[in-house]
Image (cartoon, rainbow, N blue to C red):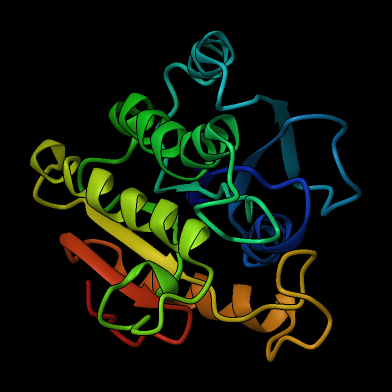
Length: 223
């Protein structure tokens, strides 16, 4: 009997998402991962599907493609920085709409639609957020547009808690400052360091229940 854990990583074409998929596969998980375009070079154990979560019909197609499966982990990894200037006065309405759609609205809609496929006894549903989303952690309003979109993600994800079974856990995870296209080459953490920590957290929180906001190292963050 195959007892491998099953994971679905939504948004794994590069950076932290790809690192998560590879780290899980290396630990023996069976991984389905999604990309919006061409599948990247990755661990051969990863099965790739294509989806743009901002498109409702594509989310429906994804749901149909994995119908009948049960996942120990569903991780929604989506995020864009938004306008480089991060100035509300300069931002166009369509830029703000696209930022909040990608960083908050679509991830939570996707999570809600996939929740019935999460294991009811020990499943972990996780969403990638940021420490900057917290009013208490980000006292100087660093990158206010990006931070506000992730704050919206935190609040909208709270609406999922009443749908959780007793054994299911909802995590909002801050990956740290990571050497990705968004984080830059001077960031403190490599992708491997961040994703190793995140996967450790995912495995340890399995079966614990509740909704929690924490970073890659396990530190609880203030909402």
